[in-house]
Length: 233
Image (cartoon, rainbow, N blue to C red; front, top):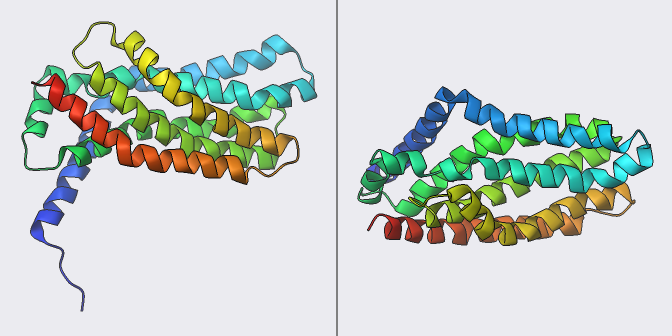
């Protein structure tokens, strides 16, 4: 016989779902902001094949670094808006003083950010990879590495967004704070794709990328929650 979950557990899941749905709905009302992230990735990545010529070997060699760097920069474009709108209208303060754990609220907002900024990159990256003469295996590893890596980027970026909340020039400050933390994600993400292109297994780089995601999932919401409480004091 199935057991009914406690009412407070159902309440927590309902609140998290509502936060996720609300953030996505609010972001879709500003479709230009959402589209800017995707268009930047497409345009920036597509310029490299045009500027470097049509040498297939050169394109396949530069593909991992180009696609991953442009994906990283694209994810950073929307970090400053992660908590800013809720902070300006007082919604964030109500979330902090609510009965729901702030850590779970942060996770819900990070997932919403990833759905809007990271997931579109994962879906369109294989199409861009065709311009770099990547084979089917390389495209699969590229999509998988971006699927893991962009979520880690959103989690790590939430810490920078929380630390700079309410300050001027948040975009530059966030970049200064999170870029050093983004380097391992960039190295192992691009390394997995590079390993396929030279005939090696990408398993090691993907495993390390997954470990970074696991650590980010544990520590990033804690750090972001603490930073949000400080910003609202």
